[in-house]
Length: 396
Image (cartoon, rainbow, N blue to C red; front, side, top):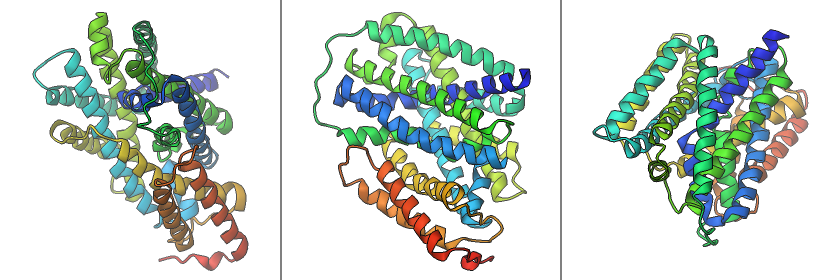
């Protein structure tokens, strides 16, 4: 019982740390034009959509004891999954750069040490230390770090909401559906990672639910902090509020620690995905390489705008997990022994195109939910039509 409780705690801490990030707060800022009431509704609805997908993705890994990209083989085959593993590594390099860049920009605004690139290098080094220590040795360190982050984030929340003036009015710059999609996109960005953490548990449903629920609550909190920063305090960045409130040191700790802990999850999972691509690519050296590349990009490349990046991730990975959900929970199919499942690859391409087309349609629930239902229906219908014909995929 004690070990299982520790497991629940450790998983909860991991996903609390994943959600506490500058990127989540800045995405909340972008939703502020809706106003506070509609903004909160969009944040909650979007997170429900994204976290339902996140839960099923994590449950597949927990049930099969496989990493996130290993579970992709169930639907797309041994070699078909390489496409998604490669795309996942690329998006994780991108996330590493975005996280470090935004963290460095906020840290520099709070405390000037000579330039954002110096802060980017410093955060990259801290993340690298996290990687070298390794996830199995992080339990106590993570407990202390997340506990401090929790207290400091409460302080930051109190400062922001005490700052409040008059709520801004809705200005029509963002539709409700677009706000829902921006809210769903962040948990969706963790779809290709969650099984890397849920695969090693004896209680799949419990641990996956705890992980998803903690992420849901904390991520919504971060979004609301972002909206509060913009709506109540009239700022598009946290740094001026931190400085004005006289909590520079506290704010700096939040920025640096949250950026490092979230980025660690990205680079760790990139290492796991690299090992899925080739056994010659070992987990820790690959994670170190991704961390270094992401840090260099953050130091020298302009990677501060990431809304379009979120949409791209959604268009790639939402159809992918919809197909996995259809295969695992509806059709009960397993194609992992095949080379490439071309049928599912084609369905995924259709899903990708449908998602991109939905970006031009203003629905009140965003793009992910309708696309997910369409892809699941297509997948289930195709599998029902082909029945037990397992030769629809060919080893190559």
